[in-house]
Amino acid sequence: MVGFNFVNLIALIGIFLATLLQTIVGQNCGCAPDLCCSRSRMCGLGEEFCGLNCIEGPCYNVTPVSDTVTFEFFNGIKNGAEGNTCPGMNFYWRGSFLDALKSYPLFGQEGSADDSKREIAAFFAHVTYETGNFCKIEEIDGQSKDYCIEESEKYPCTPGKQYYGRGPFQLSWNFNYGAAGKSIGFDGLNAPETVAKDPIISFKTALWFWMQNAHPLINSDQGFGGTTRAIALECNGEEARINYYKSYCDQFGVSPGDNLTC
Image (cartoon, rainbow, N blue to C red):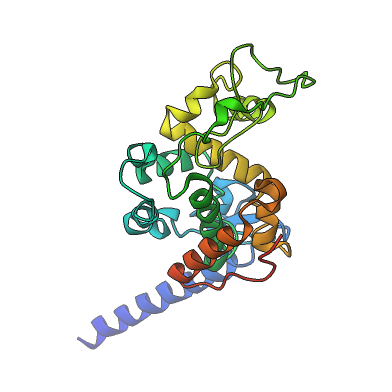
């Protein structure tokens, strides 16, 4: 009996030392400060190194965005719309957002958990304002407005097509439709109406614009005000956007940070 306990003690000590050694090695990968270290102690960037297997360096926030953007949160935005006959009520769905999100793995996944929640709160604050609580799919009276810059050689306007606001961010102008279409994989110039017909592509256009223009700003010195400058012409609707943002931050249990105004 004494021999049995001694053998087990030796085994336990061996396991402890192996685990300790693995921890010490794993936490000293030797990677450059701006690179992630994976569990296999390889250095690099991207999902393979900075995602779920990251143990050191600028690892992504591994809390899934879906844990923050719950059914209750998403539908709570919808419930704020005036009336239940809005065209967006049967167009904007949480599942469509999460499907679109698969193409943008860095959204809400960089920095701390609080940074993630602030980014999600900011994104949906702008979406709430632009769509009227997921009510609008297309800009009101958009067909009467000219959003074509004829001088755009890279993304020339297609005759008969209009590039007024559509989708969660009310994507506008031919150069945005062209660039978004090229990045996402739809014919933005020849079929801009796709943004108002396909909910996944619609959310992708908003995420595309966000990652291009606002993602680097929300958790920087520019704060939420910087994202409003990036999204809203002449800081349109600034007060309402701030109120939505502060409300969502409150729901997520995080402070909104500084520099809220344009």
